[in-house]
Length: 134
Image (cartoon, rainbow, N blue to C red; front, side, top):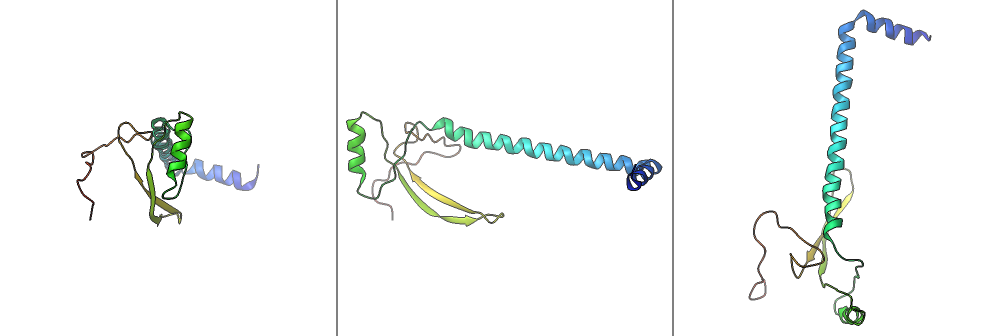
């Protein structure tokens, strides 16, 4: 047996309070690590799994302004369902890890019947305005 290992065991046996506190600290740290891992897995399943289950589209096409007529004609010729929506990048923010997180504004025709379903948790559904927003 190596000398260091023998001295460590002898020191631990001579001071049982220190040994007990070490086991207690290691146990608490393992419980905290496990709970953080379970929470991370749960959040990922809730967010990513929920998004995947609530979307009913197979393909998405990005086009410039005014180019949607050809895509709509193509979809109608083939009997495919389609939905027009507007996506606009709003900017990005650097998080605590130094990663750039981008924000995108998404404009939908409907909250309930679209290919991207949106569940409003709090508040009311926006109503179309009678005039242009200023």
